[in-house]
Image 1: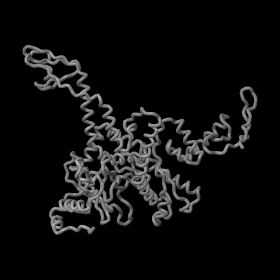
Image 2: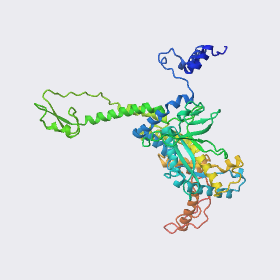
Image 3: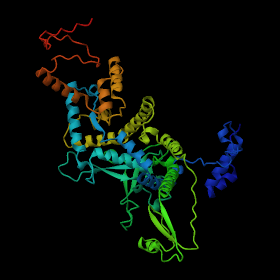
Image 4: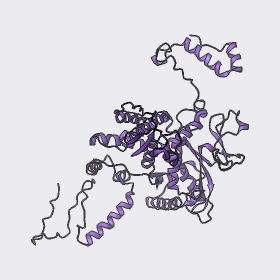
Length: 536
């Protein structure tokens, strides 16, 4: 079939009404190229009025972001499910903060194993000193581990967060690096540049769609306290001389050519608000049903017991307030009529059904979203495993988009300050990547039955499917070398006190059992204990 080319009328309409011309041309394309998908048919009763516009990623999102952000933040402030979803995600993804474990590529750098371990421990110590200090925050309010939660929560509510590379205000800071977290609303397009096609809601891009710079307001546009004229500052994405990244734009890119992030609650904003209204109505119904109110009918309706109550309690002259133990005065010609609300005994099943849909959209199982574990062990374990996959994905995403770039910024400043040596870091991109190797340890997973799950981990280690270090990191978030060194010290102390033999045969950790050649202690009867038989 010969391809359809735009007609003269199409070109004319494109110059005066581009949106209409595009829809008209696409409609003609659809008419000539009829597919076989039922979901694309327009002659079905369920699909006749469903005609969404096929816009670009920016066209579908940029115009709605201001409303989406404000509604998302309102839900997080006032809706229990939205607030719980954010808090549950933050606790399981970030927790008290992701900790650095340096893992440089010693082989690629030509370093001996011992020298590499010493360099890693020094890098970890320096970074932790910087990260634990509030000097790493340009506002001097939070340390780096707390900033991780701030970035995660900001992205959850607003869709994206911006981190500017700044210099610390303290002279005695471990490293001169400081971070400035910028909320999404402050990155915007100035009115005089509204028609610039290469600026997408404050993000200036090149012809390939890569960010060149970010236009930042000096204050939040919703800061009603300040009545000042807005000042815009354009900050380059990369340094002109150094080529170093100067701004981190943390967001989920769901489509090609998407330049701004979307709040996590965007797909469920409407259903959350409707469920909130439904719950509020049910709560009010239960409260009103619990009231016991007595109505006194008098001859005049003016000199009764409750005639002074309305003005005293702040109600208007025509208002009647119900309440527990309330006495209300009514006149002779007045009577009481009540409207019985509909029976909603199915509130809880319906509520749970809707919350399950919300959980699907947010990738959080119903049991964890509602903190309601009443199913069997297997069902609860499956829910936690599904949640663990989602949280692991979000943690890796946060590391790649925030933690790892910040660690690179820190290493640049630490090397320039002479705190640490990394030959070839600035001259060789391969060696730079080798020096920046790292592992980030997050919060431990939820364990339903510790005995069962630790036995399963022990079997996995014996089979060689897992390492002890992997188990320690996932289950407790600890450090293998530190834990091992501590166990060695504890064993030496207990062996010196005759509380356990000097040579241990670790059970369930895949080690070979060694024969104990030390003197065997006697049993209470004075008979020496038998030596364990050597396994063949």
